[in-house]
Amino acid sequence: MASQLLPLELIDKCVGSKIWVVMKEFTGTLMGFDDYVNMVLEDVTEFDYLGNQTKLPKILLNGNGIAMIMVDEEEETEETC
Image 1: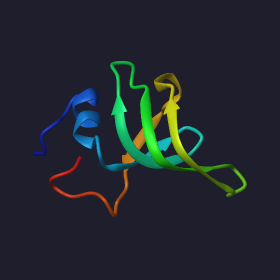
Image 2 (image 1 turned 90 degrees about the vertical axis):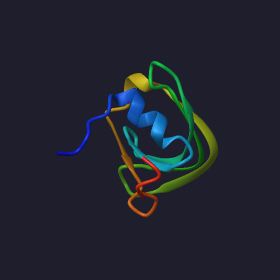
Image 3 (image 1 turned 180 degrees about the horizontal axis):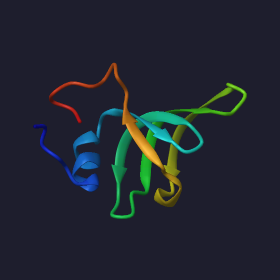
Image 4 (image 1 turned 60 degrees about the vertical axis):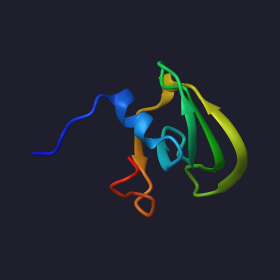
């Protein structure tokens, strides 16, 4: 059986990894977060509902609006989250 991590433990393991944040559809490198799951992402791409992409150097996401995060499949290894 796979071990289970608490949400903040999982996010802590992802610092420095590229993640996918599902809200307005952002991808970027997770640089940090707080107890409210507010996140700082760098090298960000925002996707809108029409499929348009906007590049942003750095953003701060409000944790209240985050429904789900996923690790980028290309980045996923045993050593990262």
